[in-house]
Length: 242
Length: 242
Image (spheres, rainbow over the protein chains, first blue to last red):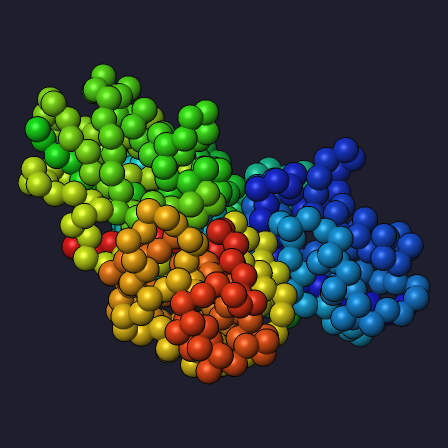
């Protein structure tokens, strides 16, 4: 069966997340419907990182199999034509039969955008944080995330998870005036992990938690701390590594 | 009378432009209402460059006078609180009594964003042009705009205009992969000028008009050509120079 790999950008504002849910508009649902409209085949599209409601993607990767073979350019063009304008299919490739967008991904990279001043243009894509933030303290705290840790402190509980281990491979801060970007790459992200980390880093920035306390929170493997979940609309799945 | 200068960012998507119109949501109307809510005074807010419906601003400048004196920070904070999230007041200063946002402006700078591929994130702020474009030809054509010209060929007719002279002071092209920015600074912009220039440059990019023909169109001082008006949502008033 021909296997197709998609590179996707989407604006999560008006989606109930990636995953199909009956009666709700989701990215997966809209793409699967579009594939059906084009090919008359019912497919299941797998993605590398399931995004929650309101979370955006700049470089989501997904794949699906068809019975009939279609030229990738045809699928590319048709999906862009059929799906809403808040999904942009950037690339379609035919890939080897064993490629799986999720299982084969080596690492995912997310970026969270914060603004220290009210934003009008692009407010759908940035969390305006009205507090003064000590960015150096936030960077220091985030430095403790590098390497492999158990992330119970920064993950939503999930009885299906076998473990909460994740290896943080890279962190990068972007400071452009009052616009801040926090980029994080890991082999694996737990549910709500980036938003919980960001919400807790904001508490560090406000002076409510010290960088050392942030480190202790991580080591505690417990959610009993004052961090909050930063809002979805600042978060982007930026890139998937294979 | 205390005179206040505002630096404004706004997302024009949901405004019927800058200028007050009865029964319609406009940037000027929303700001004037907010000043009234705060101060109980009815003011007229003047801006440096009136933007049309759907056009955005990153650095619009405006001013208004009050009878009573209010601390600028108070006005700043209150206007951001009262106006919709698609207006961000970036700065409020008390300025000398004779300052006028429009008459004192030396130059205005606009930027137009084009994308050569479908865009999901930020599609409200970029015109997706589905044609292949020869960007070098477009740059060459735009080079003919430098200096002082009569812009009848790239302006909406207006019986109130005394003349269509404008001096183009600077042009800059930004090419970031498939995202293109066209930045233009002039002492004065006629109505729809940037959008008509951009629409005609796109015809150059498509090979429908040569750079030399673009130059001839400008010199013709006539709108009888195949250029079109590029859509509003790619256009930003970026900066005002005093």
